[in-house]
Image 1 (cartoon, rainbow, N blue to C red):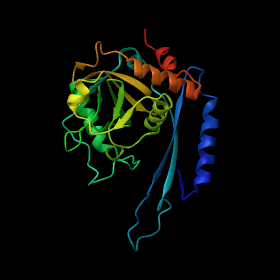
Image 2 (image 1 turned 180 degrees about the horizontal axis):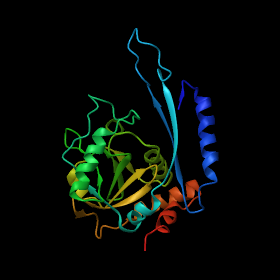
Image 3 (image 1 turned 45 degrees about the horizontal axis):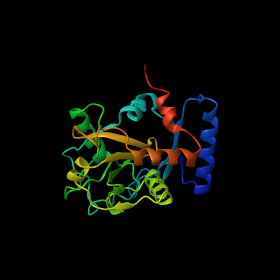
Image 4 (image 1 turned 90 degrees about the horizontal axis):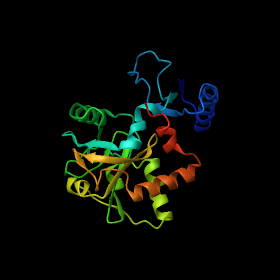
Length: 244
């Protein structure tokens, strides 16, 4: 933790954290390197100054849950829609990258009470699909890729990458309001996130997606394009860690 460092210094410290951890990473492992910026302690006027007052930067390095998530690439994700709704943009813009995830955490806990290994996707106050904790949603119907409007979600880097890959592959994409009917009748559904990149969805509220609830052709096309873009087969990285 270091107070008030510049962006250049933060990059330097991130590279240092990465270099110190590289020796500990096996050939079949992978790590997140994350940066968090806090406002620090708000010292009341008149109180003694604190060394932690003002902004602080935290850089952390944690292993990706490859073993725990490997089955998601074999079986697909089971999505549950919790009763808890996503905080609306009139209260706090979802487009702000904030680590105040309490709304999403509570929704995830509710979903996992229903189905222990499920992933929550929240509705907004109008009943339209938004996002999950660190994940964006895509539905495929009749060859068109649909995703919630960017005004309603945090547009993750993986989401943007998928939009670019779809454009490069001449696939039609629509950013629009999507409801549960759209999810139930979709041909394919997948989620994107930093750790998943792209992962197919098997079911929503217990209903199988598509004909068999398995990975669809467009999802597979985008996953292959993503692997080619980053020049690393992260799909097999997960599958190879499957518990026997």
